[in-house]
Structure formats: structure tokens, C-alpha cells
Image (cartoon, rainbow, N blue to C red):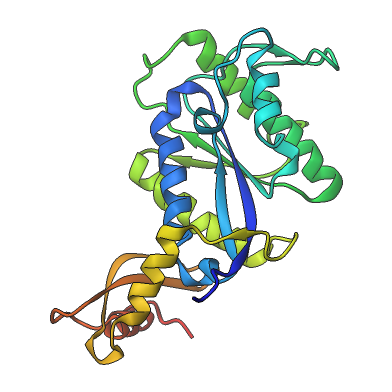
Length: 261
């Protein structure tokens, strides 16, 4: 029996208030999708750190302390993805340091950001959903979000960097897919090689895929996106015995239309 290969576990911390639940699910979907991509599946297992799935509903301590106890702290992961829209969240004072934060999300982002400034880790991605309807959400919460983003920029703000605006869930999903790929390409994860097994479901999918005769395989793209900045083109497909236009023809057309080298 062939042993399941060991992979490097790559922790991705999901940080957000409660008003962007669909975005949290979109991040987890993107991670699951990328775990099936060959360039990741051969060496890494991306693991989403989401409190709603990993943290039990315990009483007696501040919620953020319980989250820290049952998940990696935000400065200990490979990447932190933070998303904000109409809410900042509930104010939080850390019981050990007495430092005040606007919310648990503010604490998680700040801790990851400060660690990145010191050591270059974790990598931090920040997204802001366009407000859209001006009456959406609580006014005080919207003002806190605006104040948070006002801390960026060259005019004396205490945060340096870029954040990405988006206006729809579909746009956000595509941004996360593309950005995670780009970041992993330029900043490969470092750590203990071969620390976790590939999930059995993904391993079985790969085994079944390998069992299909090459002469019967037609690669029909199901997901496609590209970045003209990084000149990276990714085509993900499924195997099919039905007639379909080969992926290679599609790739050639895209390359020709964009005049890529």
C-alpha cells in the first residue's frame, strides 16, 4: 500500500467582525480549492484558522483570550487575512497587557502587523468591502471602520501598506484566490517539511485522477483567472471523457490576446 505523502502545514488566520460571514466562508472555500491545485498539493496543506470551527463556547474569560488559547495567536501563522465592512466589533482590553483595542479584529490585525514589521512574518492581507448603502449597519461602528482605515497612508498614519477594496462576494473570492497564489509564489512558506498528511479525500481524488488513462483525459477548464502584473496564468480543470475544447487551445488564445511573452 502506497504511503500518503507528508506535506508542510500552512496556517492562514481569518480575522473579521461578524458582518462578513459570507467572506469568511469564501476564504475557506478558496483554501479548499487551492489545496487541490498541483503547485500547492505537491508540497503544502493550507489550513484555515477560523474561530467558528476551532473554538468551543467556553465561559469565564474574554472571548479573544479563549480564541487565542484554542487557535494559533495571530502573529504565529504564515498569513493573516483580515476583512472589514460595516463593523469594527466589540472593544477589547487585553488582561495581561492592559492595552486597549477597538475590537478583537483590531487586536488580531495589530498583533500580526507589528510582528510583520519586526520579523517579516506573518504576511498580512487586508480587504475592505465598499459600503454601498449608506444606511447599512450602525453609524458608530462605520465610523470606527473609517478611523481604522484612516491610519493608513503617507500623511502620518501608523500603518504602512496597501489594502484592497471590493464590491461583491464574487470579486472578493477571486481576489483571495489570486492574492494567496501570488504571495505564496513570492514568499514560499518556511517550516518543518512533511509535518501533516494530505487529507484522505484529496488523496483519493488524486488516485482516481491518476487511474484514468491519459488517452481518455480531456482537460476542460472549470476555473480560470490571470494576473497581468505578475504574468501568472492558472488554469484548473477536471478530467472528462466527453468531447471538449482542450485547455491548451484556450491558453494559447489568452496568451495571444494579451501579447504575453
